[in-house]
Length: 129
Image (tube, rainbow, N blue to C red; front, side, top):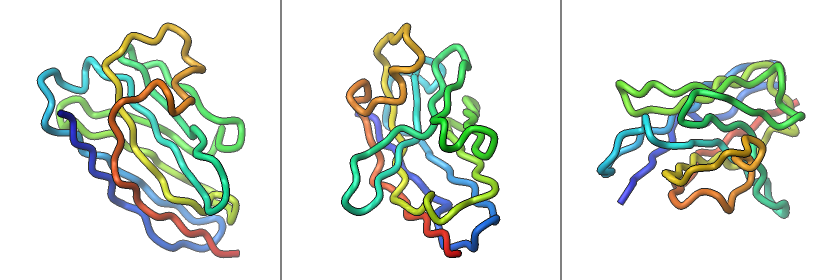
């Protein structure tokens, strides 16, 4: 069973930066074999994909965060990161880390929640104007 624990959320003013971390543990195979992603959910809205990275290191981003957010994976530390710059009030949400061992050949599908079997509990990000 994979455990994912997010950290790094908080409150920041518009234009500021935060770095989220997601530590993975409890698995048989390391993060080298995982597809991983970041999702967010604001009150009253559906969970949406923010960024994802596949086992080959290919990345994909939602249009709303392109050029501002960067996803990265440190396999040695089994930790996924999301560097968020130029934050906007619309970025306010609970941010979740997700992981999957299943093969997914279509990169864009990694931004859909259904391909992931493991989820963290989330970390809150609040951006004030």
